[in-house]
Length: 353
Image 1 (tube, rainbow, N blue to C red):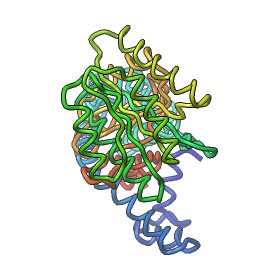
Image 2 (spheres, rainbow, N blue to C red):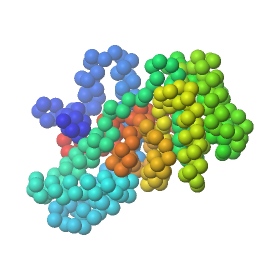
Image 3 (cartoon, rainbow, N blue to C red):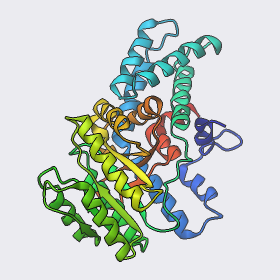
Image 4 (cartoon, rainbow, N blue to C red):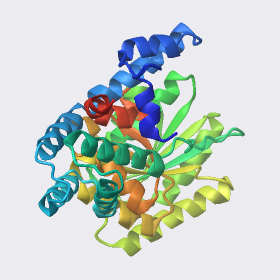
């Protein structure tokens, strides 16, 4: 069963009558503990609320487009491709969706707006499932200190993301140390200290312009001395010179792996979803310079370009592991493909049921 059918079945009973999401939750949550049910509901609500801007924009524009659907009209397909590109779905995913609709229009004799809408929504939802399947487990270290390296350009929300993750670990009862490895940007060290004070995490740092690799080593030493569970490492985000960036990151990784052979356990690239195609270009550069294990998409609640997840999955084959769906400390969520797709296509999925 594809992701589209899986989501659709959650809103349709055996008689194909639409039932409410609330009723569906009651049925699916009967075997769960009250606290688990509450967490799942809050998570689903966060996705719906956080993706509201993308969902409304895409649904409105797609409905306007399909109102003029003609299965032999080349102009329709060109307008569809323009819409997808403008939604930052990416070139490869756009061409795949467009060609699939062209093919299905002939095979299934699609001539009505409803049939065309069903085909494109199913294609897009299933593509989310194919490019970002829910088997990308966050690689915590079960035998000691978990080391997470954060990379990304300035202004994408990297430091805030580190603080949010630290807050969530601390809420779980874990001890967290932060390493201020961005010694290049003015104010970066102070900013991390402020966040460390707010969330209750120790911060290891040096003066501005100091050696980031030395900060990483000191971070590991202090994390061990304080028997910390997690070490979160900030890094500089300069892209002006890829060679310098690569050398700096490689030096930091050598220090980490020398002290902890299987670390860093995750290298997370933080991207600002509101920048759309620019975020995709940043991801390509960082993929060339370091071994990125996952992506954190920040500010998803502030953009109408939710298609960026498709572009990343289709063109880069890097899993999105976390999404920022708001400004509070609890608004950083592990990526859930099903909840993301439903949050983005809710009305369209229900229209096709």
